[in-house]
Length: 312
Image (tube, rainbow, N blue to C red; front, side):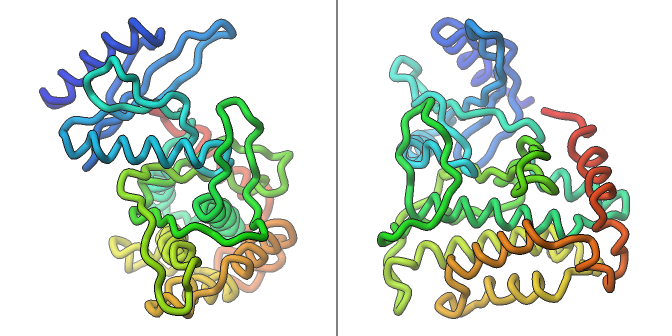
């Protein structure tokens, strides 16, 4: 840990320990807009892990202030990181407190699988794509729910969307959450949550897209992540990704450099829902390594590369 983060950790531990019953702080990451510290929070019902994002510079202060505002509007969305506490006024650094997502970044899962010469199965990729599609819906139609309200599984409402664009889709900004085997949408892929809204903003309308400009931008960003998880990341160009034709074609269209030619959100949602709920291993029997698309092999992949992996 560098000196700056050591000082920040000491300051945050002192403040949040005194006013929020947080303890056992540990810096788990530093980025362009602050540092992340994991704490244990003492509650009447027990303890839970939380993550505090703390500014290091004046620029960080502005970014976290903007992110706090956006996360308040996105509160309640199932596939967006959830804000627990807005930045405390008594702490001289701007900060916010979000939920702890237990299985870390998809980037780490991909790297563990790659080192073991394994690919993320198509059926898991469809599940990740569906989660990210629902996160896009949340950004277009923020739920604005209160803390403690039931979470909203994002569906497309019949009203004009906003133009919020995330603008920072990266494998480090999608987290692996709970594996709910009794939930058809997450049976073969743990829930994926989008984080880090430090540079997100409402973008101006573009051509025929109009109000759907933000959606089209987010579709491109999310689709690039799924492509990278399939093995198409620039750092792993020597790898054959063994994608099914339908998923490969959809990803190609979603990342079209002509933003106005990308599929609309309704088509993307329908395609992902259909694949997640209806595809079986037999839909991939013609592909290399199709044995890894079977239920028990996907369960083994999740157990090995996600559940049994070391946690932050």
